[in-house]
Length: 89
Image (cartoon, rainbow, N blue to C red; front, side, top):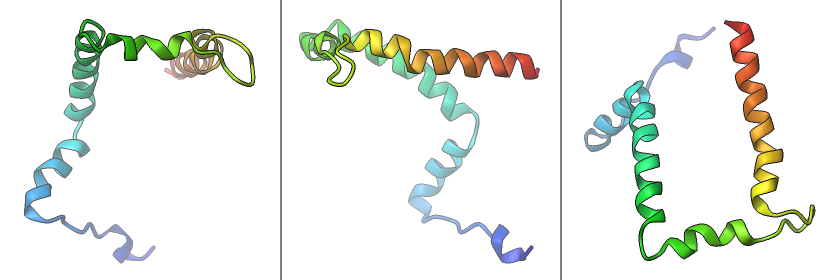
């Protein structure tokens, strides 16, 4: 392999701290702590009707409520992934 493929180009100085933070492991942990707090604050705010409105919509192709589509589709993939990871360990 060519050594040029492994050369990293450094970003401008004002974005270097952001790039180094997102490459570290603490960025994912911070996102996992901030997201639930933001969701709770949004659900308790006066604009919470916009937060819960999509759950009352129906799926166009499946004619099911959106929460059922989420539970049946992506949640099944999530638990399949978790099961595969547990089995691998």
